[in-house]
Length: 350
Image (cartoon, rainbow, N blue to C red; front, side):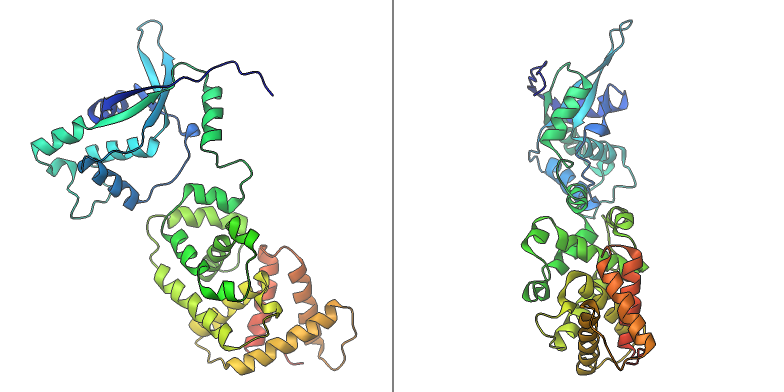
């Protein structure tokens, strides 16, 4: 282990909100976003925080440490180590920032009566001062305390940053009984938030088409963190696709309940029902899918399959290849989707 060169000691003091606002405005308190946990607050989070202050309720302490000192003027600065969202929300409220959208029951600062303004400015915040320690040391301490890096996958990292509208829609869909009843997700998937990641991919695909997972999750989580205008619509559509799949009464051991396959099936049934307004008969679709699966398993087992057309054989080969590739890749998703699309429209003749 590396030698510990510093002992981190903290001193807690109380500072009034007016002191914090003044320090930010005079730049004697400077944010250091590289220290932060980077949780992206929604507008709802910010409003709730302002309400906490207006109702004289406490909130968690913030952390600062010594920054640069001008040796000529003896003027020093502090760095805001932890609490950037809280401090920036306070300043935004005081300044009347238009990006902070207040509901009718929460008055803007400028509309508060004098006594309430004074109470707001005199509200005391617990500030813990880490003192004068090296930046790299402070950064390491807070990376370990608030770690969103060590051993976390992409969805867990995103979860540490976003807790907004689209993520909540994904969580609602992940809790649908369909997935537990058909064993779509393993316990390890759920522990590592793979079920939430799956639902995000479904929602994004419905909106923009097939994509590479690594390209879009963060962008959509950020874009729809505050509001997700089509959330209820897409949740309804996915639910209808799940209900249709259930209505087919497929064999519980069917490959159509595997993650990659059911993902493609959900998307293509949604497109058929909602985009193309097709009338699908569950029993007919079940027969088509079961036949395709039976032939697919024989192809995968390198068995000779007689009596099928060249186009059907090619579709089987392409699907088998796509299923064996990365299930989160746009190319393999597109191939699987196009194959299921043709099956649903009865465009693949055996």
